[in-house]
Length: 219
Image (cartoon, rainbow, N blue to C red; front, side, top):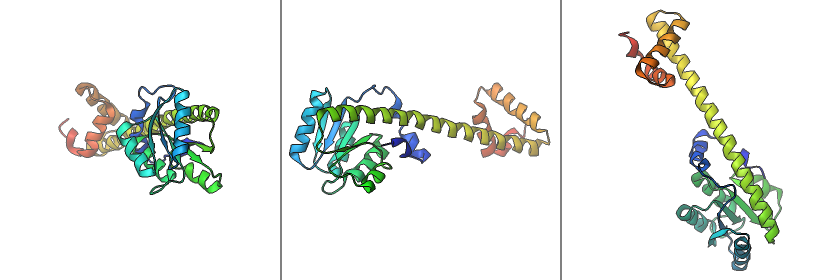
């Protein structure tokens, strides 16, 4: 399951940037959500034996979301079919709003489920019943995919920021060309001089010109 295709909107990406800071190489605290008590008991026992701290359990999607908001686990394991809200619907909220990656637990391998999971913050899909070895391997793989996602996410946000900076600098430069009747190189030098003299980043100076075209009228 590839989580890197999950988020395309820049504002959503930016909400995940704080998650990159001080993340461990493996998750420490995991939420388990399933409406079958015996399933949650078994998986919780296996996770504890593997050295994880278990949050929950939750018995439905709504409860899973609430527990994630309060306890902020590193990763959530959600049953795909639960009362009130499905695991897939809960996964979307948990990932988009809290940046918590999800592994789906399911008795079903329907391609439609798998396809939907690929777009809602799901980084793993496990078929029940789940063994301790399967949990160990799949949790590690899902976490690795999540870390890769965050790295790519950061690169995309950085690229968008650089492109926006370049765009606003070009806008400011042509405002100066027109207002002061100077050449493009002269406008660029004027921008750079103003940035140096005021100890401000060049994109910040450019934005002030775009927002207030008269800022240089007295120069």
